[in-house]
Length: 322
Image (cartoon, rainbow, N blue to C red; front, side, top):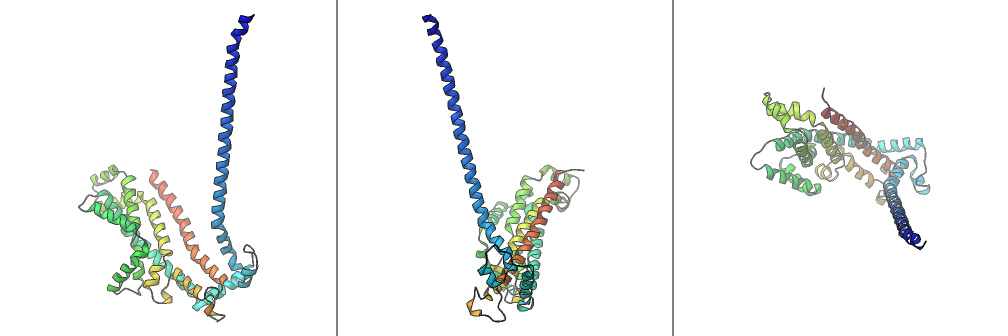
């Protein structure tokens, strides 16, 4: 009897050890699960705070033109006014300097799209040439492109002004369009794309079939590069549209200003930002300024939507064969 009891004691001990081990694993899993839930909750909370930080001013901006200037201060920031007040704000904004807001929007469109077109026509072939050809000074040129790309754009305004002044172009639309078309980031983006994505064997096959380098680029490389072309176009357009300092330095008169410089004129004519303007007939108020800002933002959003469609179309065209 004693022997049988002694024989069963190791089995009982093993069972207890297994149970303790299983219990430890369960506790460890519960601990890891609790930490995972806590980490996810913290991430969600952080994202909510960041989203609120960016969305709250945007909501206020969307609602501001629906209220009068006094209601904008007295009422809740998220209160909705009326659509008739939006029409009133638009009429007041349109009356400012004889419809200057429309002139500024037109100028921004001309400067941005012209600079974007030149940047694509020049930058994409330049990136292709850097990617597929070997020549003396190629690496040096790439390094210079990188250095200029990381330089602040404001640091180049003074040299560009001196250059445009020597060409007698200051005060001319080309003093803005030509610097806008200088887009080293687009050149480097095209270089990376043609180096890593377009097969070199495909380009070699086109050359063997008798295509010149230009025809190889035009009929083979460029259609495959639609995604990067759309990307360069979008980034260049956004940079051109939002540029303030360069047009402010280059252009002397209000009828040549783009919308970003025109907004500075609006702010200087708003009593809330410039008390010296008082209640004169030239004054504009915060709802009109908010409406002008929305008008300045809208083209970028529209171009963003169309560039996304072009990007997806280019990806599908490059990934499928008939």
